[in-house]
Amino acid sequence: MTQEDRIAKIVAAHESREGPLLPILHDVQAEFGCISPDAEARIALLLNLSRAEVHGVVSFYHDFLPEADPRPQVEICRAEACQARGIEAMMERAGLTAGDTVRLKTVYCLGLCSVGPAARVGGRVQARLDEDSLVRLIEGA
Image 1 (cartoon, one colour):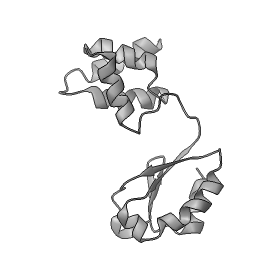
Image 2 (cartoon, helix red, strand yellow):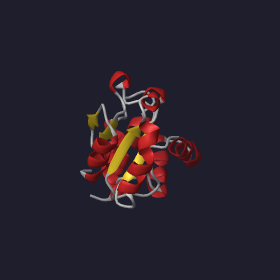
Image 3 (cartoon, one colour):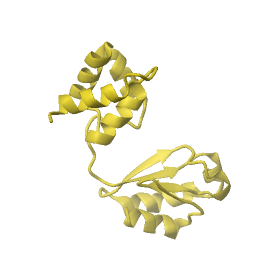
Image 4 (cartoon, one colour):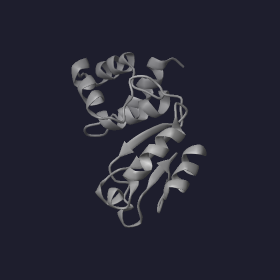
């Protein structure tokens, strides 16, 4: 099945939804690891939108990547509650540990404000992090 066919299948799965663009973009990114310019064009065509409309949404949200990044990703909450619990002091060592092999992504709230600092790897959320446990989490990503 070609990329165009796979995108058409994703779009078709959401055709009954009102405002399907965001769910479609999330599914395309999950399928291909990014939203390429070709994917933007195909989605626009299938939804009868302009490429500019689709690109505007893709470029607005930081979750969507223009090209796939094969590195594992660690999402680190840097919202106010996690800041108050010391996440900022851990970020230098986290960055050094990640280097070029792990992608650190800042997110603002993982919903664990009372037990932060928190991070998420592959859908698994870890809370009550200290510097050493954050480093171990990054190393294990």
